[in-house]
Image 1 (tube, one colour):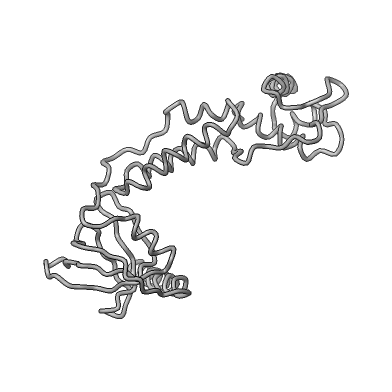
Image 2: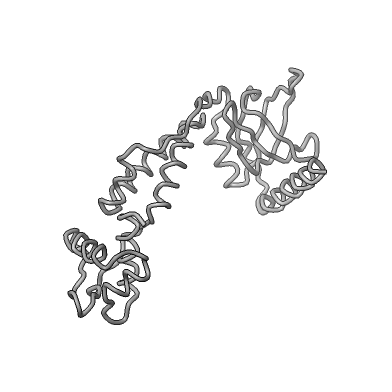
Length: 233
């Protein structure tokens, strides 16, 4: 177990303890040596974590201490770092800016050992970033999904034919080359996928499909599962 993970687990053990916990008990739970626990306790105390006690009598957390609202294990931090890196590959500028803000907030909230995961720059999402969506604001689509608002699309299909569609957007899928809007199409009366690079115009309608989003997503997922089973033989 790496040091950052051990520090996190020691804090958790002491926060939940009703009486002093010896280094031997902590070492057994973490599958490390007692000497490692002693060193980790000293490191936590140096970070002003209010741990009291000593060798032979055990350790306890002073009342009133709590973890910051953002406290993660080292593996969870690595998952967050990689997820934020993947967001950088989308063509959604608003989401990319939001990812930078999230990274800064987390780095400022977590203790130094975990902060190193952000600063190490050791995890990367490789590949080309998706191009910006030209005629459509993906932030508008995401808001429409959340608010369950219909959108008015000017769309060209794979044959280049222009159509006007009123859609009920229910999901947004980011691919390397484009983004796909999953929606109930009122023209086709069915779930359809609309590639962002084929959309020539997109406007909010002020019309709503409140309460229908979850039901439409269930229809979409059910159809997806059936297609997968058929493809699998």
